[in-house]
Structures are given as C-alpha cells and as structure tokens.
Image (cartoon, rainbow, N blue to C red; front, side, top):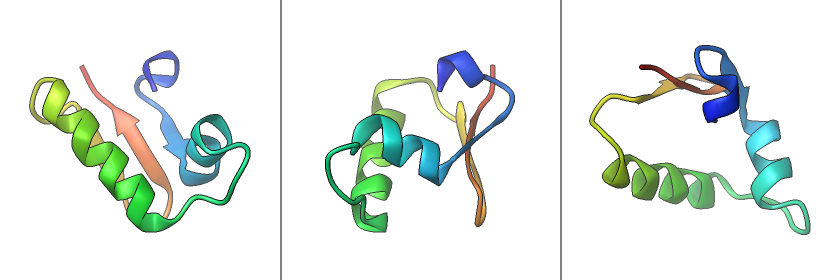
Amino acid sequence: MYEKKGSILKYEEIEFELWSDKEMTSHALKSFIKELRNKIPINIIKNVPQEGYTLHK
C-alpha cells in the first residue's frame, strides 16, 4: 500500500499480494484492513467502494 500511496490499490492487487496461493474472501480482506487500521494512525486507509483502498498521508 505504501508504494502506491495516493492511488487506488485494487482488491485484486491485494488478493494477489496477500493470498496468492488461495482465493481471498471479502471477510478476510475486511478483517485484514481492520487489523491494519488498528496499528496505524486514524484515517490513513480510505475505502474506495467497488474498487479497493487508498493510503493517504
């Protein structure tokens, strides 16, 4: 996400990077993002509905 800061990281790209050996479920992705948000400053990760996520400063 950091390397693509400011642009949209599509769901498919996240799936390829994190779950390359199996299919990603929407629940698994949401859980991952929730855990990540708990570890970093508030409002850094933004959801782009139907597309993916973006990382803001």
